[in-house]
Amino acid sequence: MKPQHLKIPNSADQSFSVRKDMLPNINNRWHYHNEIELICFHKGSGTQFVGDHINKFMPGDIVLVGKDLPHYWKYDMPCIKNPAAEEPYSTVIHFYDNFIGERFLHLPETKQIKTILEKAKRGILIRGENSPEIVRAIEKIYQSSGLIKIIKLLECLLAISNLPQVVLLSSLGFKYDYGDSEDERINDIYNFVLNNFQRRIHLNEIASIADLVPNSFCRYFKTRTGKTFSRFLLEIRIGYSCKLILENKMYIKQVCFESGFNNFASFHKSFKLITGKTPKLYQQAHTLA
Image 1 (cartoon, rainbow, N blue to C red):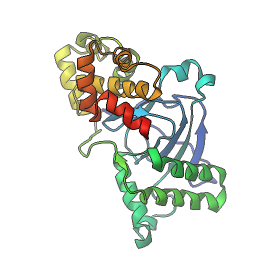
Image 2 (cartoon, rainbow, N blue to C red; image 1 turned 90 degrees about the horizontal axis):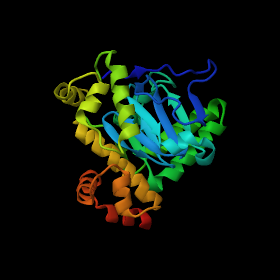
Image 3 (cartoon, rainbow, N blue to C red; image 1 turned 180 degrees about the horizontal axis):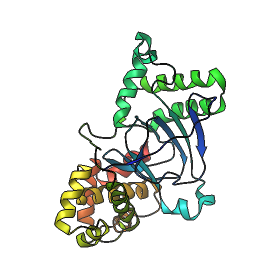
């Protein structure tokens, strides 16, 4: 699939851009850009696509996306229907890897930063106990100006590189070198699934969205995304169930049916397959955290 190539606007008197996005789904398309992106989600939750990785994003999550790596943020429907209630917003930073000069990352002293930017080519997720420190660092970048802003960005990247462990998102084998004509088709598939995953989606129904017969659709989807459609749908449903479990507003059996599963045994098995934990253990682990 060929994601949409976005051009990030930047002021002529600034070497990189930093902004706060106060509305959800400003760039709700499968896209990429030449700049590296550092995004911090302050409020609001939804589904994130980074390369071939699919998961939920939550307040406090930080993602470092390498240049030319396709990604897509889709906020949950409550955020869209009632923005005032959820107050979804994020801080977004875009910068080139050579924004401070062609030779900068080749200096021996910048090896740590170069290494973390190399890892960012697969996407890096920061959450949990490591998140607050990086959130504060990102806020300092936003509040700074001039040379101090550059220094604060370097300090932030250094802090990320010093984390004991980071989560890499996209797989090593992810490819995205397909033709422009596939852009709209894959976006239509993603949007249809995100809007309908809570009910049963028939294969001929989703195939018609892509204007393909079912057998051709299955081959097409696996080729373009590196995973089967059933796996893709499963990851969307389990990601949503994780969000509901963390909110702790309903029983786990209710979460099962709310997430699009028809029976609890199937939900239980699928949840453990994707997360490595049973729903109950997942809930307990995050309650203790």
